[in-house]
Amino acid sequence: MLEGVNVVLGVSGSIAAVKTVELAHELRRHGASVRGVMTPAAQGIIHPWALEFATEDDVVTEITGRVEHVDLCGREGWADVLLLAPATANTVGKIASAVDDTPVTTCATTALGAGVPVVCAPAMHEPMYDHPGVAKALDQLEAWGVEFVDPRIEEGKAKIATEAAIVTGVARATSERDLDGRRVVVTAGATAEPVDPVRVLTNRSSGKMGRALARACHVQGADVTLVHGTGSSKPAVDTHYADLVWAERAEEMLDATLDACEEADALLSAAAISDFTVAAAREKLRSGEARTLDLEPTPKLIDTVRERHPDLTIVGFKTETSGDDASMVEEARRIMSRAGLVFVVANDASVMGSEETRALVVSTDAADSFVGSKLALGVEIADRLAAVFD
Image (cartoon, rainbow, N blue to C red; front, top):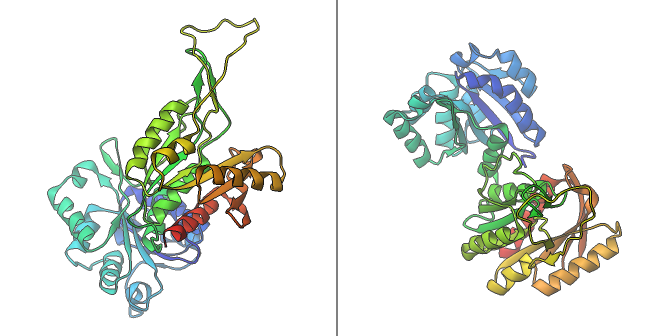
């Protein structure tokens, strides 16, 4: 998501500064180059050598005759984005007042004046975050175009956002935002049909592909609703990039998706929805004896959505077990024709639950092979979706 992006990481004196080594690594894992800038207070919490190790570059700890702030964040500077993480109440207030008494605040003033995108990840105790002066400073920065990655309010603290959330915020700030103003609904994960109060019928879907799609569409500027199946239990997921709606049964996912699509521009139907349901027993079925379950087919989500919304842009997903590309393409085009889909992403079931995938992106006249991470495939699909709206 950040291939070729130059990030200046401005570190202030919050205890959350200890997380910046891992943050720098995570930014680089996604393709970014990172340069560190530290306030004196931050240097009392984490040694500049640690950030130098994480970025593999010199860290700016003072502004000298080399005018480091201009070199990094000026109009012709190195940075594509300035990331303030963690941003303390002190640093936020100074930036809002154009006070330049640390390398970080001086870089921020320079970036704002030069039109370099600025992303801010606040971290402080909750009472400080709620202080009217701090709130006013945050509002001022937002009015100047600074983008925020909101903190996690826990244990009386406004804790810095997760590394994943910050990476997403940086990617969104530096993307073309070709889906800006679009509302996108994504379905993800497995549904589960109860057999009795204990047992369910479900599948092996992890929801990783759907979550990658939602994240990629958010990065491209879309407002995203993620309808996520719980499977046998709700997975622990960080969905900072979407409005999350949980759905256990196929019927619940269908209803939630139909509601979300009322105001949507597109549906990306990546969930593994139960094809069959069963009349659930009121009490636990006793084990140790043979059972026969009468399975009833569930409604096809994309067909139902298409009937309700004839003009909605819909992207389908199809999982097969044949291992044969020709068969996957044939099945994808059959579904595409039946439901009026713009394209279909077909893959073999062997990739379920993994971070990596191999898929075929099937349109009317092409079947393009993709091999890589599910997040990278999500980016590819978001780009193709944006092209549909051009």
